[in-house]
Amino acid sequence: MEVLNVFDANTTASVLQRLSNLKPESRGSWGKMDAAQMLAHLNVAYDIAFERQVVKHNAFQKLLMKLVVKNAVTNTKPYAKNLRTAPQFVISSNKHFETECDALIQNIKLVEQKGINYFDGKVNQSFGPLTAKQWSNMFYKHIDHHFNQFGI
Image (cartoon, rainbow, N blue to C red):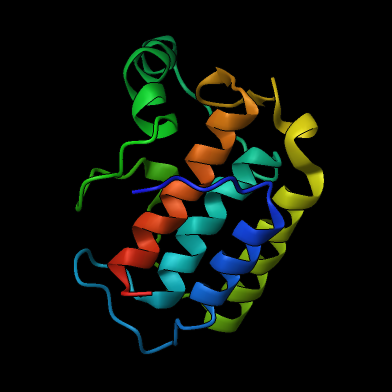
């Protein structure tokens, strides 16, 4: 898997083209989420990154996140299917496909617009300061994983 740079306009165009192939009735080849829930799930990462949603961790969770989870989330290795999902990312309620899709489009565009300088050294609520490359890897891997789940 090639991890693309989310701050690049070509990556944005490619991701949005893939997204345009998702339909409300699309089904994942693994997992429990429907298409609208998957989009809402993806939007959580942006809500956390832009501090629209606050994540609280106790001291043990913070240590675990920084020592174990951070590298797995920010490196270039693809995610395995059916990984355990952090509680704030679990979407079990019904979601509106078009609303979540529009939000994801805006989030993807906002990341590109804010750019490398905005994200380089920006503190992640779970992992602490990240490089722009780590932010990019994290965003792209997450999208690519779920787009692959839904065959787009």
